[in-house]
Image: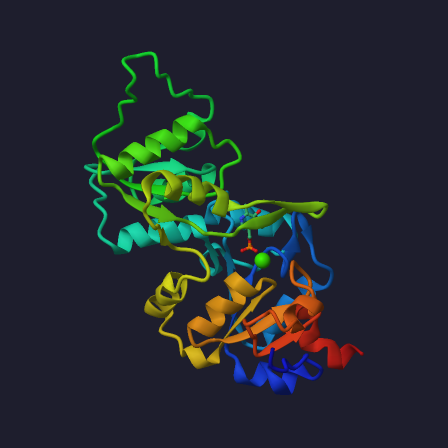
Length: 301
Ligand code: PLP
Ligand code: CA
């Protein structure tokens, strides 16, 4: 692949050209439940330098309020909830923008953990499924039919460690027979639930529903442009002065390059320098760095 410059004097190379940073979370700010060293100080310095920041995660298991608690718990108390964009929030925002009724006449069936339901509650969209269906069993004894609520107008598929056959069948019926819209929070193939190994990501749950419906979902998380369109409509920003910072090529860097943003790949998460620079890689960030502390590395070196 083409030469990607590694940040050495980032203040002149990047900081002056950027007003807004969009930070991916896992692999950039934290790894699992541990804050990456030096991040609190780096964010504080960026804020003092007048940079606007947003934090975007494809992990739908928490709501924006849930992530605010996580930021607070990690000592990042200066980050307000409005700067946090989880794919659970994006799914709810997508429905709101596409005029999904909020008068209770239509409902959402959720495959996912608590985050999606909490976001739907905030905009008044009734929902079923999610954790409430964790222990349900598709009972083929009662006439061989599973009856579904005819008012389900959308199915949101997010990461769900309690996904089961009942949930898959319910979603399948809502989409195939009830004409519900199929929405995926994200398609991450694998995720780093632990540092020890890769774990099957939401791509596996979406794959199950794709497999039984033959339908493609509307994806609301990175690299879909929905999140940047939302930010733009709310804050009216100049894309050429926004930098997407992430640890993953096929979600974060692609989100940047596809949407006209600058992009910085950091090596503090899932992508190695070897993978980035390999001839097999076709996704090219504008810059790469060891981690976001590199913004100020030249001053502290
Ligand atoms: N989905 C799940 C379930 C995860 O656990 C993670 C990372 O831990 C992600 C997605 C990716 O999150 P991010 O977009 O913050 O890297
Ligand atoms: Ca990440």
